[in-house]
Every structure is written in C-alpha cells, then in structure tokens.
Length: 252
Image (cartoon, helix red, strand yellow):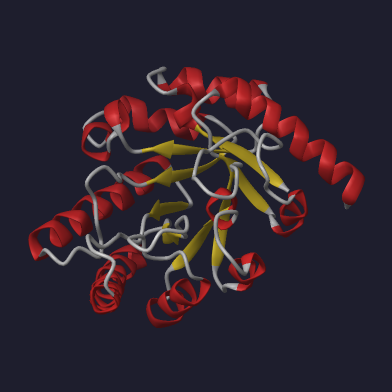
C-alpha cells in the first residue's frame, strides 16, 4: 500500500516544514486541505509556495475547499459558487502537480426523498462540469463517500457508482465513513476509485479517530492500495501508520 496523510494534522505549519516531516517519517504521499492559509485562492497567488511541492518526491492530493460548499445545493447561486471554487482547486492542483482533488458530494436541508433526488441531479450536473474542466489538466476530480445520515449524499454505494458511470469522475473512499454505513463491501466495488481516506470511529459518528481506537474492521485495509490517513493530530497519524503497517505485514 502507498501510504500518506492529510496535512490537516499539521495545520498552520509552513508548507515546506510539513513536506519535510512527511519525508522524514517515510510517507509516500500527502493530502493538502484547501482551507485556512492553504485555500486555493491564497496559494494561487503565492508561486514561491506552490513551487515547493515540486521539490519533494511525494504524491500530492488536494482535499478541495468544503466549508459552506455544496455541489448539490438546491440554491443555484450557492451551487455555482461551489463549482467555481472547486475549479480553482483544480487550478491549484495543476500548479503543485497534484494527482487529484477530492470534493464532497453535498447535502440536503430536509430529509425528504424527492429533495434527495433533485440534489443528486444537481450533483451530476456539477460533476459533469468539473470533469469537463479537468479534461486538459493532469489532476482528476474525485467525489468522496459520506457518513450515514440522510442529509448527506454519497453515503450509498449505488449513488457514487451511478455518478462515476454518468460523469466519468473518480471516487475517493473514506473508510471511516464506510464504517458508519451498511453493506460496507459495496463501497469497495465502485469503479474508478482514485484513493482512500483512512480513519476510525465507533460505527455511529464520524469521529476521525486513530486506527484501532474504533470499530473499523481492519480487514478493509486489504482493499486499499493508495491511502491517506486523515486525522487532525500528527501523533495519531504516526500511531495509525504503525497499526496499518503491522496489520498488513501479518495479513497479506
């Protein structure tokens, strides 16, 4: 397995310091969260920072901006702005040599089936537009599965399978999110999976705990060929790295 981690765990550090830490600790890849000082609109104006990524032998991914973003919003203005900012993340990906940009599929405000169907249609439209925008870029747009909650889209495997079949987008599978859902193996059968987020929880709430601290079936790690440990604490990243490597050494 290629193994990396989310730079969220080192949030507010300088980019070169975070990349140095990744190399020193034997990681293959990192995922940049496009929030705070690393927002796409900020970094696109800081060429001295974006060039730093090219100095390291690491695979780079971007978790697209997600605060107040909703690619499936029933409000057209919010939906268009969400697409616009996600396109900017694809621009940033080009600048730093990233392989893919992960985006959340969106959510609805009320638990009504017809609203979910409408939102899924808008998500498909938004994703079509993003896939078309990425055609002349190296990075791919990848839509992430969500935890079990009716307001979230993309927490049923068939929704993501339909989306990738209809639009050609890639898919990011979050194991912690899978752990809150039924029929877990169905998520690993979705085509066009680009990479995986790795974290743990109690099977009920999306807690992003260290691997081994929750109820995640570690056998699911056998399906992962390219994983990003997605936690907000670097000590827990290192703890999870050891658990993952020890488990795979004994079980593969």
